Length: 354
Ligand SMILES: NC(=O)c1ccc[n+]([C@@H]2O[C@H](COP(=O)([O-])OP(=O)(O)OC[C@H]3O[C@@H](n4cnc5c(N)ncnc54)[C@H](O)[C@@H]3O)[C@@H](O)[C@H]2O)c1
Image (cartoon, rainbow, N blue to C red):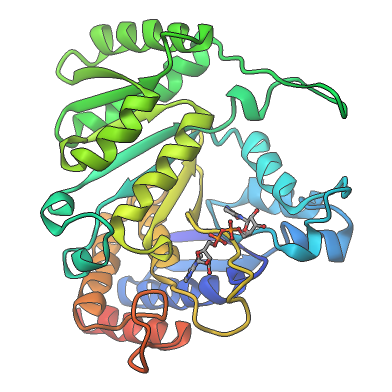
């Protein structure tokens, strides 16, 4: 199979972790005889430096023509001046909107060999396997804004169609898993949440009668995620609530550097990225954890290319490397910690050996 992948390394540790992911893509391509072609483009702070634009037209064109996109991370103190009108994060929001990437999938399945790194008791994180589906192109992040020194207003708005399409993604995923969907809203206060709840109930009743639906208010959901995380199968929610709940859920696994994500559109094209940011505090040291980015490559192969065996090979290699103790400094704080590059070499060796 021949596929074109655009890699957007971005800022901070982004280039370090995507370099490992590119090696893994090459190892998988060689093992399964696929032509997985890579091209690079700028986004975020590096794009502001090079083109004065966080999402240059050339980057967008390449992404629009690609089969999938792999992103490192964007942002950093160099571009964080409060007065700045051009910011790296605008590149991310723009590419999500331009490619129609309305569904953000964040699986949280803590690795058994790392259970002791979780802030929760090991018995609480055992069997946690939750897929959080976050609406990504609507809601308060994209609504009208008024801002002055005395008054500021953000507008949250959702149409029934926006809710329907994300609920269909979540319902479809739940159907292939444990047939349980939790929809999170704030229907006791917000009009958008009442629409969300009504539309979700309707879609699930008519199109996914085999999937059990539960509604939770967002404040309760935040508690339940810590009290009984193993009870969740698929969770669907709007943009702002999803942003917060996915970060909360991420700590269950022990390090933010471990978790992948996918943002997909209606035609299956996706942007894949680790959930962490550009980690400016450790950038340039070669110690960033690359597992979340490599796990994002597995998601790319499965969701955008239908390469299930290849994705499973990467996930098995990750499991083996973690069990063998090939860990970066975010997990082990002694001289057994490996560099980003050393973890990459261990992963490629494990893939070759499988
Ligand atoms: N999708 C994205 O590109 C994205 C997401 C979140 C934040 N950001 C941006 O990243 C910058 C830094 O944000 P932040 O500090 O809030 O979040 P962050 O995720 O970059 O870092 C939070 C903490 O986690 C650590 N960390 C993150 N990734 C790691 C990895 N792979 N290995 C080891 N440790 C890792 C960092 O060292 C830091 O201590 C900001 O400019 C922010 O806007 C970008």
